[in-house]
Length: 311
Image 1 (tube, rainbow, N blue to C red):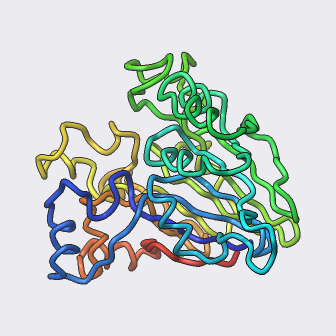
Image 2: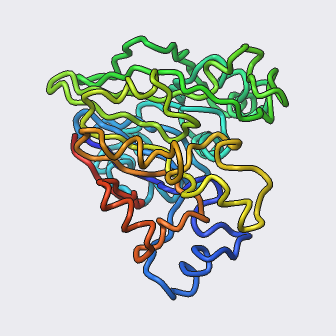
């Protein structure tokens, strides 16, 4: 399978428009080696011709224009035929869904999402209610632990990623349960994508609060892991005076510290382990930072926009 990292930053992008934290300052003034990044999304293809979009960020227009494989067909009379076959969502967060509205000129959109995510986008944020007014949307309910063929030998299996993050919208607003379900099931999912021809698998996990035994079990024998790298430290935003909650309270496992993702993931025999969904405050965004060197010495990569992978 072919994979393109369209955007590797967390919500707000890097730099974030209203932030002057050290990494944002460095990318603006060029004082340290670093690259700007757009908000998190990837595209996956079984054949380098038809593509599936995983999450639709607010930066989607620029991401599509930066990747010729997603451009409309040329040399034919079908001027608006595009290779984008479907959009597949991990959650209902704005940084993963606002880009859906940028697809409103499409003749129709195939959307894969759990019932909890669909209901939040329709009744909570009203994003899908707005999109339905512009173009047909065919919703494919995502059910965990079920193999779903996408075509040409590519399939996915979704798995639940437990979260206690407080929901802003929907039936579970304010209680951390989401959609009225007792454990927040379906609010956040990861995907294990398999190339049926080779048997090789990619796990896409841009939001994870804890690497529970069930979640870790989904990583077995995968060739590549794209994983949540939002914050380096759990109290990163608090120390910078930018927020009053820890990374875990915002639904993200920090990289460093007791129980952090670095200690848990670095021993795993996965060919490529790549952090994405990087918050603008994360020092790994700086190429020369001690945190970047530590991550790399432990076998972890840090994604950049435009990273191409062949699994």
